[in-house]
Length: 166
Image (tube, rainbow, N blue to C red; front, side, top):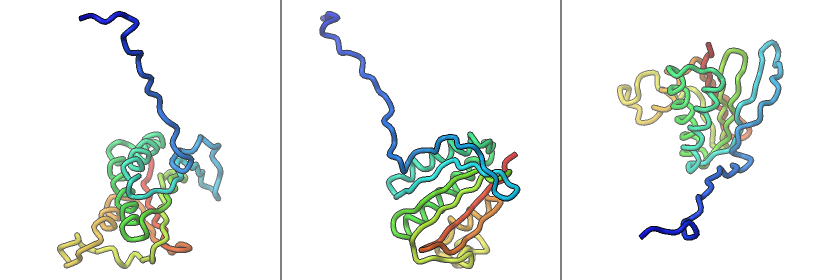
C-alpha cells in the first residue's frame, strides 16, 4: 500500500547540539607571545572517565588543525589519553586539559587534584620486564613524545607533554 504525501513522515532534522561550555574547543583567539615563543590556545576543558572518548576526538581534531602529521598524531592522542586516564584512575576521577601550540610544539597540560607523584615513578624499562606492575602509560608517553615534564600542582600534579610540529 502506497502512502499519500500527507501521511509520509516529515524528514527529521538532525542538528548538532552545542556542547556545554567546559567541553568546547575555544574560538580562534589571536595568538599571543610568551617570551619569544608564539602561544595559541586550542582547547581547555575538564574531563571525567565518561568524557574520555570525546576528549580523544577533540585532541585529535585540534592536533590535526595545528599541523601535527598523521604519522605522529595517533601517538600524541594515545599519550594524552594515557595521562588523562591516569588522572581519572589515580587522582579523584577527573582532571583539566589545556592544549595549545607553543612555538613549534603542540603542548598538552593535564592537571589533577590527586596526591601527586614525580617522574621517579616512570619505569626505566618496559613495565613488566623490570618487575613493575604499573607505569605503562607514563613509560609509553615518555617514549612517544618529544617532551614530558611532571610538576607539582596546587593541589595534585601537572603533567606536560609535547611534540614538535613540522
